[in-house]
Length: 183
Image 1 (tube, rainbow, N blue to C red):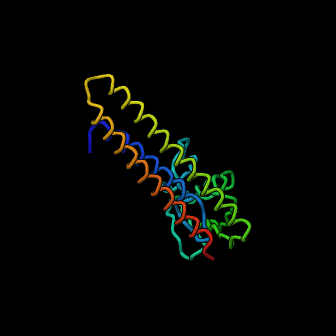
Image 2 (image 1 turned 135 degrees about the horizontal axis):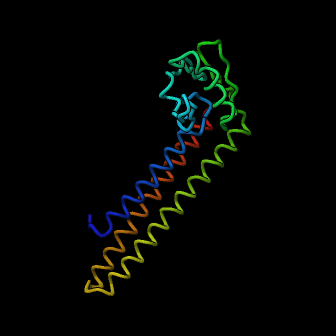
Image 3 (image 1 turned 60 degrees about the horizontal axis):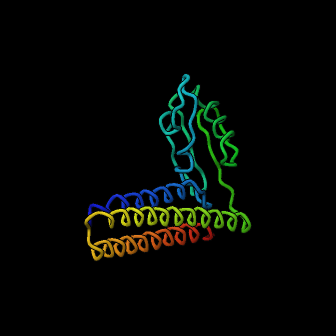
């Protein structure tokens, strides 16, 4: 790949990776420990990720179990989950916190699919903006001593790259939508 367009390929890759990491935080009926990735707890005055203060496991398909390393952290973790936007009430027995995921209703699944598509469209817009930036950079190159044919070839490669990433975003949208709609 030409060095002049490699930077745009990396930006598009980051856009796709960002979309996929956003998708891991959307719950789809099954318990996925990644929905806890963004939750931080106050660990002796320091905001710390949940995974650093507790063992997170999935003992059943619709349950996440959180076992803090220290018993004193149970209340702190429970509070962090309650103030997050997960929409799940934690249960604890003094040692372990359990998050039970209710079966998603048809209506909720459709809302989640809309959200997935919205995030996907935002990723496509980001990819197209990167393409526009790349094409603008190529127009600037045209003012230097680079041949028109070379510029044309670079622009075609940028378009092919854009098409590939748009297709990848579509695949990610389709896969996540299918996962959410599967009962």
